[in-house]
Length: 129
Image 1 (spheres, rainbow, N blue to C red):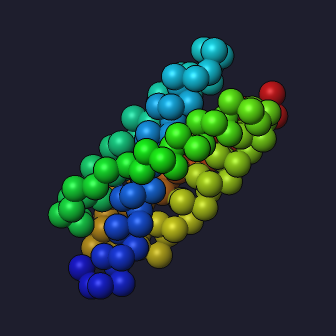
Image 2: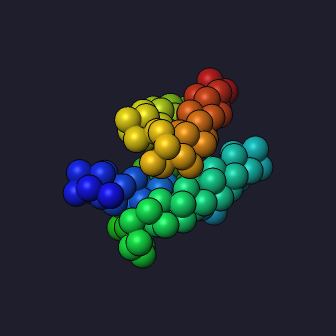
């Protein structure tokens, strides 16, 4: 893995870890069972993504708790439609980040990208409720 790819993969790994923790935090906070289920499923996927990327980087990272706690505060005060729209956009953005690396060298990234787009669709749908 060259230095440019390594830097990108460190960012991917950190982002996946942060997203997994964020979704778990949202699941703890919400009283809506449908939202809770969506958050827990996304958290599971994001954790799996982080583990896949860690195999490429060879580095163990931890999620950034401060960032997640701040997002938890925002989750409590913002309308959920707005939260879900923002999360959806973040998932699409994350999926697009993987696109340049898809190929024979990193075959698992295609599935991760597809999961990110699927999460984007799920949360876009929730933003319309």
